Image (cartoon, rainbow, N blue to C red):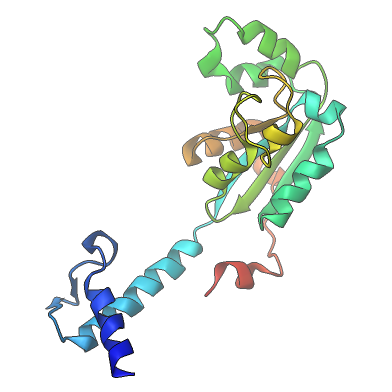
Length: 204
């Protein structure tokens, strides 16, 4: 038992300073200072628990080709199984004015006119998903833009045929997600609700 405790303390003392710091309450951690190490351990786990409480939101849009191929349900299922919470969803024919704002950064690209025509060619399904680290995780779930490079198991790897018909859009940063959500949804269209498994997913 003593050997196990010493191993635990030694590991705590070697934890990166960036993660937990080198002192607790002004008390320097020294070899053999098991009380301070234990306090730092509690602080580290407390910080991790607090991080889990930070909920992000991201915009996910099933593009016209995804709607036409009837994979909307499959995509929703993947996000639900991943533990994310759906807080907004609507099907719409995207106005060109909204698409112009959404793809503003691509307006000088040679493929921009074709992109706007494609995105306005049929209905799409826009969704807002909420969860811990949802922006980065969603990007990993979606896969590479080019279907040739998208790995099997990702949404594009499984459903996309061509870079110009890649099924789905996902916000690429928290800041972009906030902008895109406000572009596609009014605040009254987003529903704040408590998921019954939230405590199991996000609390220690």
